[in-house]
Image (cartoon, rainbow, N blue to C red; front, top):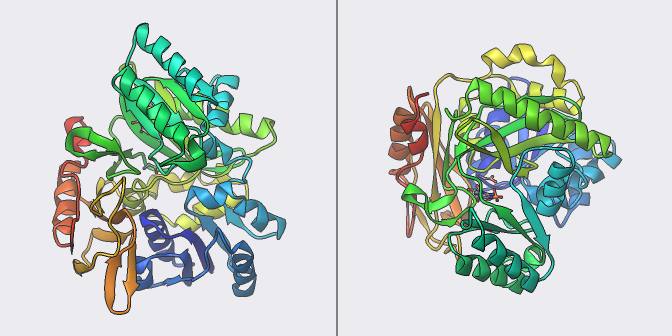
Length: 436
Ligand code: AMP
Ligand code: GLY
């Protein structure tokens, strides 16, 4: 079969790379892909921009008889790409535009969770900065006070959230979001949330409208600098599995969050088909709360998760598209390599605020077993490979323990050279501190 993956980041490189390993797959097209997918056996880049030319994409899919399409990023989902494919009778894995509001509007997601008793932080939504600032002041003055979390309502590529340690910081964040300077329209509505303490984890499931099937757990490192310092980013590295998600926590997440969400989305007329990513905060009593929903796989969580996948991913996705995920349980036992994986993001200078683009990439590691350098922001310019995005690579490796996987991932990362390359040196540290 021939498949199509939409997107061009590290997540899509890992996803397409794993799909291409299925014995059922002849070729995986990636639109638009990156310089990494262009170099990979079995993958072919397609110069069609999903956002500006959905009709071109549909014509291609019909002409090539693509068995199914998988959408990587949130933007095409929020723009209704899945709705267009479905109206043409084409098989595609991802939520409709209405269902994708779980990610595309934080206010929608929060109201939905409150309506259906899904555990999350308390919040208020504001359409003007004065009322938002007054509410922040009121929250700061009463227990538990700061931190206060300020979020842009719309899509902001992981950069629309400020965990403010003081009232001044919260008010500055509110002013900056409403000014539209950095986030455009995404910040014209702002959500102010209570701070949740605990340990974060990413819990990603495939959904078929009724049933959910959990992928291996993972944990992302959102802050730019070591020891979780510096600004939030799209993610500086990830590892899988996340020991904080014990089998008991996992059962609770399915029971208290995932299944009620699917049931409620269906009852509200938006059955949810696609990857659903619940960003969780797990408190000391092991109670999970939703920090955010994403309507897609995580980036960079996908890279270590795909590194560990052993089963045939095409079978899982087909079952999800066909509404019969309840029949794949037998696959679950053989699906994962028992070894953990760690992925370290190599970012461009200036990331996340103003990444420097177009730097020459001077050296890349040779292929090696149990490790893979996934590309994200890379582009081929003649015979030069150059950076073309804030996150440039994700060096990903397996190991007997998280510590071994970490050492292997850093060994791979050290072989990459480009000007201004920045990366954290402690990816996986929380997993190493906890017993696995
Ligand atoms: P989000 O884009 O909503 O996932 O937020 C980005 C990051 O901000 C999360 O991964 C958390 O680290 C942090 N964060 C967001 N909301 C909260 C909250 N209510 N309490 C504590 N931390 C939060
Ligand atoms: N790594 C966080 C995300 O994909 O949203």
